[in-house]
Image: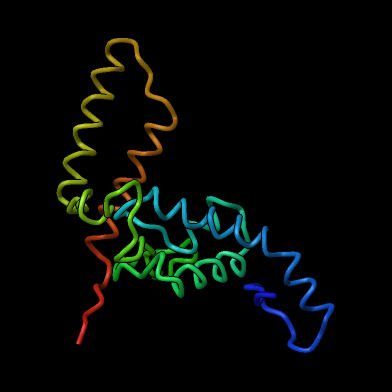
Length: 165
């Protein structure tokens, strides 16, 4: 019998049984976290952002992210973003050797610079203004995206970068 991936007390048959009963659920949660990080591309996700998106507890997200890091499926990008509590947090992205749909996401989707994000936001604002003049009201989702892009551009300008010795 293989070892369960969930933690358990060695020598306790009830603890081991509980860990084994969690295997499917842990796999599902891990895949959910992985998929959110994968879909975010080079933008990545902080653990705090994952908590907000999934509604999972900090402990659950941290444990699933740690398991994905240990497996090499995700890694720290070296970037930092502010959390809801205004602290800096690691931005997680796919692991260096992870291939999705036959191509490395790191090679096929280069991350735009802060200036490129700001330019894109200005273009979106112009399109929204033109649409409003034509009687089109931008969706809440489009407006939310614009605010999120501004947030990214603003905090990337201010965030400390990790230096490698």
